[in-house]
Image (cartoon, helix red, strand yellow):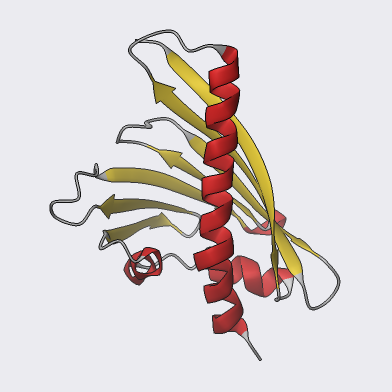
Length: 156
């Protein structure tokens, strides 16, 4: 079964200093699943101060797959990775980095490598189209759900 690599990136601004935004983004909790409003549940198992396994279980009857991810945190770089261990996109990996924009603002730099398995060969134009669609979808989630929650939680 052919596997295609969907590579995409985006930038998401925050109304918060970089250190505070990074702390918010890497404070992984089971209640984080509530941000997505799709009924999923999440478990978080810390393995070390800089490593955890996060497992999302879809709402009953949603047809989604249970997904376990290994998250590694790099505080000195304000960065973290998220690697799928199970689920339909196993071994896909996502990189996150928070960068300052002055004292009171920051932004997320996101790079995704989503691996999709297909029953047939996929033309390069289709791979590019799928990568753009994934980038738009992930950026929209950050723009509409995660960044507003961060801004609200960190409002002075």
